[in-house]
Amino acid sequence: MRYVRYESPEGARWGVLEGDHARAIRGSLFDRWEPTGERHPLAGLRLLPPCKPTKVVALGLNYRAHAAESKLPVPDEPAMFLKPTTAIIGPGDAIVHPRRSARLDYECELACVIKTRARRVSEADALRHVLGYTCLNDVTARDIQLAGGNFLNLTWGKGYDTFCPIGPVLTDEIDPDDVLVEGYLNGRRVQAGSTRDFIFSMARQISWVSHIMTLLPGDVLTTGTPSGIGPMKPGDVIEVRISGVGSLSNPVVAEA
Image (cartoon, rainbow, N blue to C red; front, side, top):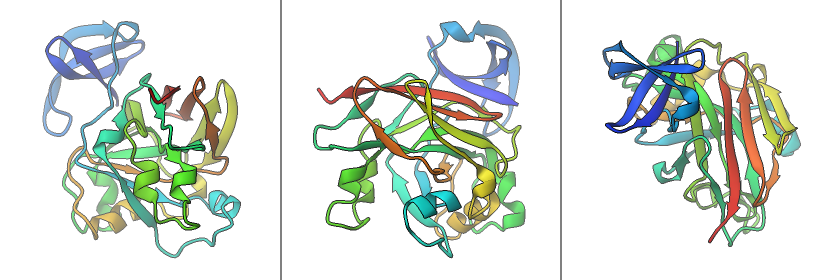
């Protein structure tokens, strides 16, 4: 199924997508739920990030083509870092370009949202812990990340407020190891790659992370970016498109 989370007078609510409408549900996607009689046109809704995670676990260098463009060897194990939940914004929200950075990059990614607690799960069982998949932009201040000639500033370079746009659609209807991930900057395609180019499968990623830290309901695991990363500037609009999932669009603004 396909879901969205949206703002209502009663607070954040979930809905099941039915064409260009969302049917409200009663309950939680992480437990039991049922549809109600309420239907809302998507055009009249403020869509929100599809979950409220305790953490965003990000994998880097998970596409062979991206490893090649970065002039780095294909890793034997995943590279992992965390993004703070304060970086999360929803569809249409503005990405703020920090004054401190001279190079702000997009990184268009497929992300999964965890449904049930996952601790030391096997690859065979890993996908059973997934609620669904969505679009994510791992926004990166590249010059800050690489300051000092190394990769030690990952949290600083990727952790600013607004550096984790996510959403809007959450779906369980795709094969995460066979979708097209694209980035469009001001309507021009600048990034494209298939998750068939994953170095580590979706099941491998979840299993590997779960042997290091417990994944909780609502947590996000984002799967790395394909080749074609590049800079954005204030006034730009960056869009993540993923086949079978949808589109996530965000404007870029200068820090006030």
